[in-house]
Structure formats: structure tokens, C-alpha cells
Amino acid sequence: MTDRSPSTAVPSTAGPSTAGPSTAVPSTAVLEPSVPSPASVRGRLTRQLALIGGSGGVLSGLLGVGGGVIMVPLLVLRAGYRQRDAHAISLGAIIPISIAGVLTYGIAGEVRVGYALALAVGSVFGARVGAGLLARIRERPLKIVFGLFLVAVAVLLLFK
Image (cartoon, rainbow, N blue to C red; front, side, top):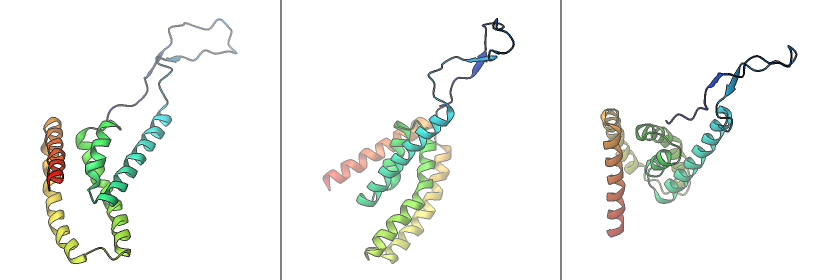
């Protein structure tokens, strides 16, 4: 994740106060007073992540796409995460997204349990292999591979 912490405080060069001992001058001064506090940065990032999660959830439920197709690009481009971190965060969000979708489609009688279990067996194995590869791939090639994957999926969907 990119560093979003405010500037560090530095000792004041103003010297001792001439106003007397009752009005003490702080010993540090902030270099950039317009930099938001850590609490406001956390709040803004939390809101941003909630919006990204909401987008991923809506499109996952509506289109059946994995949340990663939506959330990974948004985590990188909007929230400032590195590609690898965005993949890991997105993978962590899959379980609650999947549960919500399964419950909704299950109530409607649309879940084909046998097919879903067959997909799950392959997916669990594949996810383990993929996570192992993710740990070894450098950032730039990972971005290129992910981008090419998204383009290939888009082209296939347009022409099928």
C-alpha cells in the first residue's frame, strides 16, 4: 500500500517563547499543516474500500464475475494498493461475497449444488497454485498478465 501517513513533525526553529512561562510554545511544528490526520485518512480509505467492495459485490451478483475482476483494478487505481496486495485483499473478500450470492441464488433455487461442488474442487486446487505463483511474480509482470487477462476476457465476451 502506498504511504498515506502525514508528514512527520520536526523541531521548531522559532526559538524560546518571549511570552513568558504561562504560554508555552510547542516544541514541534508540522511541516505541512494541510496534510490530513491519520484518522481522517483511515476514514477516507475505509469509505473508499467500502465503495470498491460494494461495486465488486453488485457486479459479482449481477454478472457472475469474480470480485477480483472489479476490485483488483479499483484497489490499484483508486485506493493506491500495489498489485499483489490488491489481489490478496480481493481474495480475502471472496468468501463473504460468495456466501451472499449463494444465499440469494439458493433461495431462488438457482444453485446447482453438484456442479458447484465440482467447480469448487478444481478451484481450491487452482487457487493454491495461483497464490503460490502470486508470491513469486514481480509487480510489473503481474500487472501486465492481469491486464492482458482482462482484455482477453473482454474480447472473448464480445465475440461469443
